Every structure is written in C-alpha cells, then in structure tokens.
Image (cartoon, rainbow, N blue to C red; front, side, top):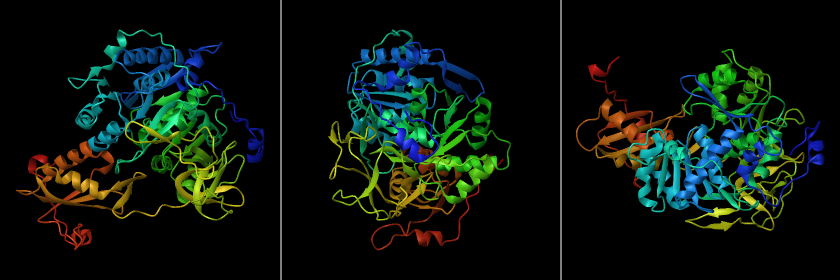
Length: 546
C-alpha cells in the first residue's frame, strides 16, 4: 500500500488508501495468494522445531488446512460472530487456527501463552468464547479457567490432549478442505484483543477485518518500506499478542512474504541462530527481546538483517545506540495502542530518528494531542494522543460481557489511553507513564504485587505473603508458612503454583521464609522492614545438591 520514497513528505504525498467495500482478512492474507494467477506454492511459513528439523508450508497448504479447521468448528456449532479463543505457540497449527476463525466470520480471541488460570478465566468469561484451540501445555490452565465461562463447549488441542479435550489433528483428518470464506466488510468484527499483561480485569478492544489494512502504513513504513525483494520476516513476540499478529505475521502474508516460526521459549542465543539459518531479513521484536539479542550479538558472530523493528514500548537511547553499533542499522519503532492500532513509526532512510520519540504519524494517518473536550492542542502541549476519525486501523469499540460499545469519539477524535504531545516537526512524544503504587514492570508489562500475594496465600501451606520488585527486574517473595518450616521443596512448589495461576512473568525468582509478615497501620505489607532484615538462607537437602 505504501510506496518507497526519498523523504517522509514524499511518502505522505504519494500515499493513497485502497479500501475495498468487501474484505475478509484471512482471504486477503492466504486464499488470495493462491488465486488469480498467484503462485500458491510459494513458501508462507517456515517452522523450525526445537530439534533443528525444518518444515516449509505453502500458502496453498495453509489454505487447505485452515479450510479443514473452519469446517471442524462449523460442525460444532461455531458461526459468524462467535468468539473463538486461540492459545498456540508459533506453528502451522497457530497459522491454521487464526486463518480459520477469520475466514468463517467468527471473532478471534488470541490468548498469550504467558497467562495463568486467573487472567485466562477473565478473558474466557468476558469474551463469551464458545470454542478454544490451544496447545497441549495450555490445556490444564484453560480447563481450570472454564468454571466461569459456561459458553466454552469446544476445546481442540494440538499435541497430547489426554482427557482434556479433542485432538486437533484427528478432527482435521476427517474434515473437508473446501470452505468458502465469509463475505465480510471492513467493519465486520474480526479480532477481540486484550492487553498482554495479566494485571486486573482488562477491557477488550474489538477490531474489524479492515484493521489489518489500517495498520499497514505504519508497519510498512517502520519496517523500511516493507516488503523488499528477498524479505523473510520473523518475530520473537508471542503470536497471540496484538502487535505480533497485526504488525508482523499478517502484514507479511498480505504481501506474500514468508514468516519464520521457532520454539516460543527460546533465548537470545537461539534467536541469533534461527535468524542466521533461515535468512531472516526483517525482524520485529519487543524492546526487552531486542536488548537481549543486541547484547549477545555484541560479542557473538551474528547475521545482519535488513531492518530491525520494535515497539510499542519506547527504546532507551543506550539500546538504540548499541543496535546501530552492533548491526550497522538503526532500530525502527512502531507505536500504537489497542484502541487505535499502529499509527506512528520512524524510518532512518528518510527521516531523522530522535531518541524518545517513536517517529511521526504514518502516511495517510493523522495523530494529534487533544484535551478532554477533543480540542487539538498546540505543538508541545501535552494531552491525549488521538486518531482522526474513520481511520481503518482503529477499534470498533470496547468489549464488555458478550457485547461491544462503539468507539468513544470526542469532538470527532478517537483518543487513546496514552498521554503525549506532537512537536513542531510532527514528531510524536508519548509521555512516560507514572508508576502506579504496588505495580512493577516485568519484561515490559505491568505486574500488580498484590495479585501475586493473593495467589500465594491461596496455597494451603502459606499463611501470609509479601512480594516486592528487585533492582535487577525480578521479584522476591517473603513467605510465612501455615505450619512447619519452609524449604527448597516448598519454594519450588510455590513457584509452580504462581506460574499456573498468574503466569510465568509473575513467578518470584527468589523466595525467603520468615516467621511473620509485618504490616503497616493501613494493613499493607511493610516491605521495607522485611528488606532490612538479614537474609535467611535455606540450604537444600544433600540429595538436592549438585
């Protein structure tokens, strides 16, 4: 959609929206790639397994496989408008599930793999999901979360399903591979996205099929006038997150670009190897992943991609400088929110990159800072960053218990939840969020310490708990046991307990057992008093020593 240009101004001047009246996201990124003279046998997906084996899947294969899954879901009563939760690692199963849900006119509800039972339960109940397609390692968490989601009647599992649900591949084996995608419009509901963090009971934002087209200008601009000849794309982000789907995977398939999928739990060393082996030229990574990759690449032979994209959290100046030194290219940022989609990006080939700003509004998009009455503020004045109305990347509205409410326009503008300002040169400057009391940031996501404490106290051997964030970015828990003394076995059990109920991101890396948890006058945990105590080391049993 976006033409390569020699300047930002030229890119904006030559840009034209091309929005069809009828549009289905899955048909666009998959079926269209096999029709009207297109070579459907081009590689769409490269899957590298943990054992090093590689499988390549063509657009034609994804079309037939997603058709089968669409028929499987239809046979189980899933129809247009029904919500279908998907919790799968990057894989051919994930690709088929996303495409099947979209092409049948149902609403995709992606569930990040890091979520525990409690945040999963909220999303299943709030969305009213009638079916779920998940990895086998998510089965126990989803089943334990189903008590508050009576609408969820179908669970298809990829892998060893046991008695938890139906075997996905067995169901696909007997299904027809012929399915006609539902004819939909730009505003037909397609995707219900919740924040990636497990904190609280978040609001879901409903997006239409046209959201992909609306996100393309910022993505194409931020990924260096994507696509270029020979591009192969990979993202380290969880495919079940809004940015991974809408800023990486689906835009690549829209342009017929192959996408690389690797094991979801790999570290930076494995990421570098994956990029080298599969010839990745375009990578989109969350800032914390990019930081780990760059620090390792500084001392390790590594591939040289054409472009490295990141976002939506801002990049620190030190990381930006290190990326340029190590990879010889500038890190590009793409910025947006769940309400308004991707709307801002930078591109070092045509504009100056200013530390602290993710760039300018993408061609075809207008972003301004507005006040509470929707009045556009002068350059430099801070307000709510807002999107001009009728932009195709904006959400249709907010979701609330089986229904959605239209986007809240203020004087014709759609404000986001992010404060910031625009300067005289058109650069957008999101304000740094003030930390909330009792909330720390782990891997770029907010974590409420009180929610971890509550989850710990539900364990039968815990009488009270206090949790704090550490300077190294980790978490430490202080535990008063309900009987007996704490030991290394109980510490490990509590870590597994928190991982299952809250998610991997909220697992305390350090656990210290104390006689009692001191409280302040308001009833909250006196963390300062705990931190001031001498550390009690619990030695492991001789059998536990290595």
